[in-house]
Length: 330
Image 1 (tube, helix red, strand yellow):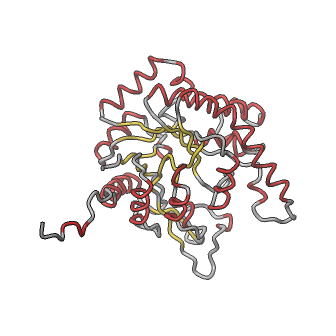
Image 2: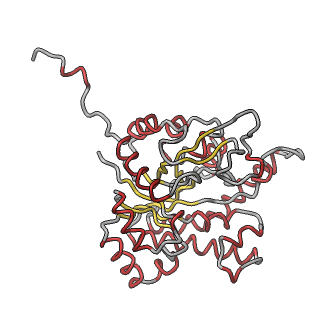
Image 3: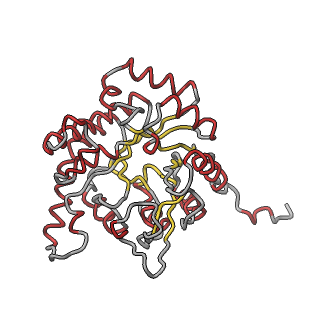
């Protein structure tokens, strides 16, 4: 088994699709996890226009780039979040400072993404949900359990009509467990999946980089939620606590050595990718391994190429042979 190695394009949406396809092919990638914003893909147009989809497919086919997943992370964030001026950066400029309209746009665009995925031959849409309760992370002032439970139910209600469109199109939805989402660690993921237990189309986009700095062992998370792992990000992070730095980041931007952790290019952090590959083999995951490249200390094109090589080296197929069966006189 050789899993596809794809490049998540969210960090590359400043680059037009053809240029990125040309570069990704040269770096060794098999395909893209295509972002539904910037210069890469308009989900609404892809849902409605055959000619637009043919144009996108033509570029992808020219460079032999496969697309198994679409990314809608910044759009999905606007569905479940409370009004927040920072969401202006994610929504169309005309909707700035109009939270109700931003929410409506996000819901309708997420619905369209299911049709876009089907039209482009993808099978999964990766995303964020947003969270109305992230601000309650530290329970002070004291947070009643009822407020937490109501937050989960609010997310369930808001995503139900979106997921109905996913079912109609035979597309899986994969939430990336991530800070600021309704699921960000082991137990919040457990509670989220329990909340969505009647929605089998709702699953997880596994990303070890968001777990390692929280003290969660990525391959244990992966094994325990294996049945609902619909997509996999390959991304690394390094924990660098030095007696001054803290895990909460101190309101300091990514890349600074004053932070207690930072994202790193693959193989340069603390994630044990061999255990992840072994667990993926155990749970029978055959989907793409999608490189989400983020490293403030490394030139991105160098990093993207190196990361592709790293994934192809670390990935290996499960055994189809019991090794000691060869020890025989027969």
